[in-house]
Image 1: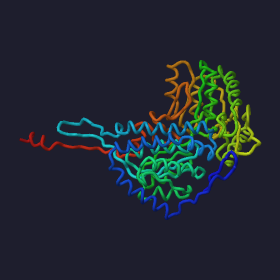
Image 2: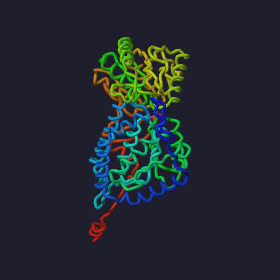
Image 3: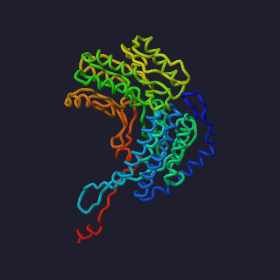
Image 4: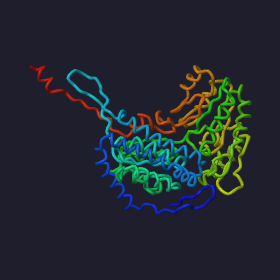
Length: 463
């Protein structure tokens, strides 16, 4: 299993994958640890999570540089990612006890009835490479604090990050087996999911991977949460602040080198604002600094792998061949590393890759629409439903449009982003279930109904 720097094509380190025996031992250890871990007081689990946040902050530059070297994100963005991981640890360290306390339900006199939130067991997390720390911590922070234990099958191109995350929990004082990294390929996932020692699974990844994970988990009658792809609309209405929308839109499209499920990908612009927005947006895209991701001034680094860049370019070429107009970019850069420039397409046919597929890189599709109703129709014209962004100065209209958008998250005059305080997830082919907030910590718990009749009160009533 290789750790490869996509900016230099240098092999950083090679790791031996876990074999069948090693995987079995780790599963058994996790199972045994869970039996002890679930009995620990919530206050202790919160204290350890707070310590994990401290470990992240103390080592943020080291972890940031590791992410940058292993998958190419700009180092300034990587530092922010580590800080966000510490934030989610702080959030659940403060609020987990509140979220997990018994929920009292009034039923009838002489009865104490409530819902108890209890852990399920070892949870397998299958995670992607694009936010190699954040996407793991947004799963691990709530679930370990709820009393579950975690096993991580990370993307094969970020093994250093996978092992470093396990070390964070170990340094924080978690018992061995509370969080375990499995260095395995995707071909082993089905066997792990169906293993009787695994209680549930969560995936952040492609729709295809989600169908496979969901099928395997469902066949074993195990809970799953799927956070899948997106083709998020960025809707610009005629009264929008065009300069702000164009600047934020370019950031939303190019964040993390364009490799984000919640990146703005389809720009749906009212015809009254179209020409001005396209001009300003294209200028903003062109102004992005492409370069060494270890340079603090770099906006866009390389794509995470050469094959991913090649696949993105093929989507662009196929879209142009189908009738799309190339306004900017559109060719891999002639330099060492998997670099693809900010690219803008217009006149995009519905049945082209840029019209119906997720473009996982800095490629924007811009659509002209005649009115608000058509904007909503265009925004919803996708099999995905993760996030959406709406730009207008009319707050009332914004709320009305937001309710019509088929997505798990809608942001007005802001790019779509994750926040520990808000539930995160999608609908349609973008998956199901929610992460973060109190919704996320409840996903992998047994919401047990408790009904306790007071026998002494019953006796008194009989007498």
